[in-house]
Image 1 (tube, one colour):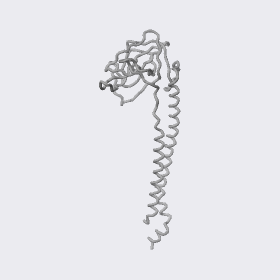
Image 2 (cartoon, rainbow, N blue to C red; image 1 turned 180 degrees about the vertical axis):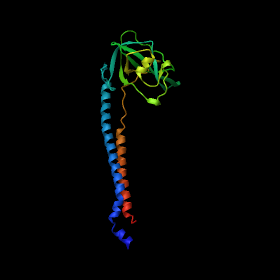
Image 3 (cartoon, rainbow, N blue to C red; image 1 turned 45 degrees about the vertical axis):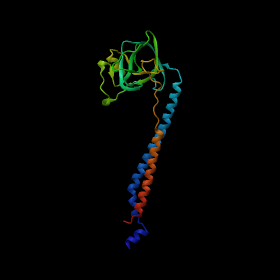
Image 4 (cartoon, rainbow, N blue to C red; image 1 turned 45 degrees about the horizontal axis):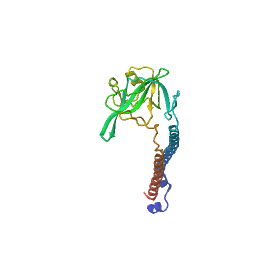
Length: 242
């Protein structure tokens, strides 16, 4: 008799079984939806940045402003300190002859106001830094600004005595080369492919990836899964006479 009564008219106790899982599912649903909406906003933000970069790529460089953004081409005037150079990073590149070991060649450039800007001329083959041929006298260099990077304890150990660095810290690189008044940023040169054997400069402004659309769909999909799982759970618990 009690079992028959429980199956024909489920008491309120059965619905109470869903309270804990219901609250948990609701919290997870709201959290996942919030993450999805956040990624939608990130998607639109990054899309706007990418369009700005494409537009900036078509424009000529402007004189270096006081507060440059990473997404604009700038130019500086002055002269090269042609007898100094350093390596940044350790990169392997493929070639018809096989793998080539090299790094980013960094050389100092003294601006007209006396400040020194460390300039990343691009990738070169080799295991020790050697200055690249640069113009004598007044010169202009263009590219984009890269702020100092710090990878903390995960960065490989630099060797300032040999001019080899694994963290793009222009002040530290400049100090190792015996320079002062070094700007706290690096100018990354933009340009066409050089003649054979010269540094290979960056081909374009840095463009951040935009995977936020996929992330948003993932979060929204997980939110739907939470709802479906709760419905299956509730159906099973309400049918259980125990």
